[in-house]
Image (cartoon, rainbow, N blue to C red; front, top):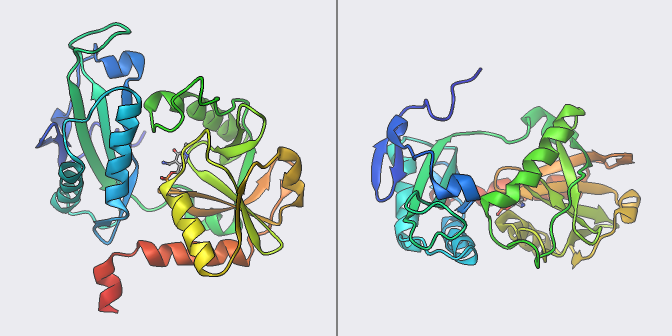
Length: 296
Ligand code: PMP
């Protein structure tokens, strides 16, 4: 078994200070563990610089607010903590994981008296999906779980609790030999994968589900911008699963997934076509740190 995430070297930023990696611990009676009163972010550093850091820090704040708590560090303080950590750890291409959670001062459904904790960890990381597989396109199956109605879950928050159905769905997909699963939403419309948004291509135009009950990804919005810059029409709309067979290309987008072409969703096949490849390259170009681009 690989070295656990609790066994690594270096430092973790925790509640305002850098602590040794092995010392960044919480008690077993932590509210966040029992009641999933926790929110997180997934960020990525390229050449030592975190892409769209401010948007991630703002989203972490907003996610917490939706769950009814306020993170005791400003967006600027979070930005500084993340950047300093990447520097301190000597990381170039890395994944950065901020998390905020309710502590152990109160353990019941009500938790107004809990301290709000916050930590950031970062580690060297190249690709979420196997890079060789990426250009061939990954295979998805259909998930059994659906993204919940916003009236039944805080769907705009990147809340830890919402990932229960993602982990179950991802495990089921991997057990069947697929890389990931496509989740429908509560209405039966195409929603997203277990940790990434989804796009389709048809007749040179981009189609993506309206993000009204799942995470409106920062990468998703970046990709829509890149497509429009190239004059590609983008349609944000309700997409029914019956439409899948009519799409020519498909790809996932996310901080971790970047742009990952999809070759198959159940019986439906897609080509890794020009638009998916172009947007994949445009995305790689835009995530490079400004000083690297300026130096070219
Ligand atoms: N949906 C889910 C469920 C995710 O976990 C992620 C990754 N954060 C995304 C979409 C993509 O969001 P982003 O582009 O902001 O990383």
